Length: 180
Image 1: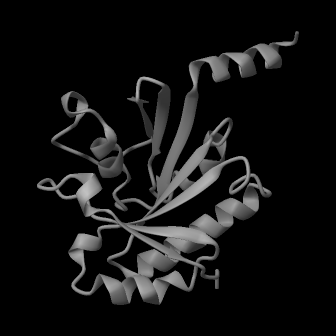
Image 2: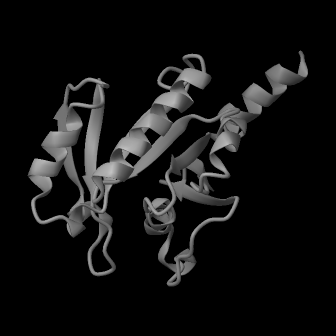
């Protein structure tokens, strides 16, 4: 039995899920991670991530989810590829309040997928979070306007405010759309 077989068996035994959270700077990645943490681990003062941080949460006493929150600054983006080894899920955060940043975010995601040569979306599942929906006056129009730019995705609007639970503020939208 080779080392790789031993590692694979250990991963199955531990039921570990590796989740990478990416997006442009100030898209709300660290806030999303913070909302997923148990109350005793939440941070009241969220600051921009410089480099990366790793948090682990347990789900139903069955799965350990390692969440890798990677900084979204322009200087860090070329290094994103280095974090995909053994990643099961990519959560891509988009700040939906800015048209310019939305387009920049989609372009970064497209570039990342092209560089990855097809692994993202197959071995690594993708979740796209349309974040900061609570800051818009007419979120429906904004989502409709941008949804044409992404294909075969489940788009999820997300509002994470201090006064509301994540589960109460999530809205699910299933749309078949295309990348322009």
